[in-house]
Length: 211
Image (cartoon, rainbow, N blue to C red; front, side, top):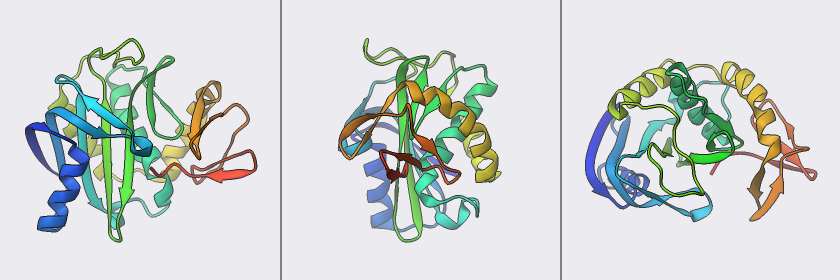
């Protein structure tokens, strides 16, 4: 994974997509920046990145993903690998379905995943410092560059979806106390049924995590 460090960018996700559009894809690339002024969040929301926080976007080929991973659940897969990396360092961060990072009951970041014919783009934002009373921050101190290296090394090992899901489905119970935005409505996850492909059934509707 080639990592490109920027001082300031509107959105690492947008910057990366424009880079691939203009120059084409030759190898996995990650964009990270000290400051992000107009980050892309779920459902078109913005995620402003203060200096000191972690925000990065990367692109890989779809065929680099585990064979048993359905593309629609890539957000869960990418997010949970990062959760595992941080847990090894002592963090109590957990993943709320489908793509939100939480410390206790406060959101501290999230993941957005988009795809083209052959490529999959993933953007991740994580609060390492306090940004507002509404959001929390990571509960441990990390070296951002070291964290990225360990994360991409972990991704390269291609943990199977089955292995990741077996752990995520246990943690999913925490999500039942919260709501998720589905079809632009906040819906409780209390009675959601989680399937082995990462989707849930709620109000007789099956929903995947791809954002």
